[in-house]
Length: 253
Ligand SMILES: [Zn+2]
Image 1 (tube, rainbow, N blue to C red):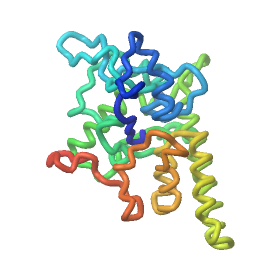
Image 2: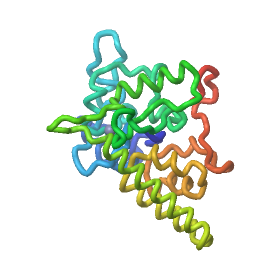
Image 3: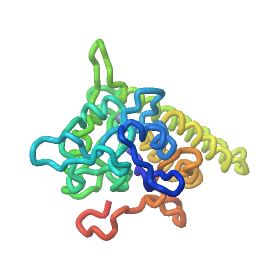
């Protein structure tokens, strides 16, 4: 889950657009954050659900999300949307792509029972409370799910694994280019980001290239991959990850 900044409500003739059907945000969302699930970052060719971040029909007593406003909309894949369903969304108990620097909270790991499955886990080194929030989010979205049914629907774990293999192969090639053609590493970094844009699962790319600021610079280039919250990276300091809520003393992530 990459951190997102989808920007302010789109306007027409300097007036904020108003929709009467929330699915009419779909094209605006694709322009601002690309054709990815906001949660697992799987690239979608179709069936992008416009999803209410805070559910519009929650259970009694839980926060009610606005049905139509831009601020409450993201894109989600079927499995993330289904897992999330009408479960309560309380930002003080979860990490969300528009609220937090989610790359500080989550890591990608191999499933203990299935080496072919890559799943999302809380990052090591978090406080107890932060780990709990990361776990809550992972459970809400089913980000450790491995669907092995004959009629498999949820392929996030397979595609995440594929992204990891592609990113690691790209790192091998990048290291080779650094040695034999150091003048070309800027171009190589850009090509890697262009590939990442097609493959998605950005947490994998940010992890594999964590020590290669040239690549991170292109991965955060919103011309190549729209929507990544650039404020979550320190452009002056090797594109290191930075806290998104520094004023929050308990949890600045
Ligand atoms: Zn998803």
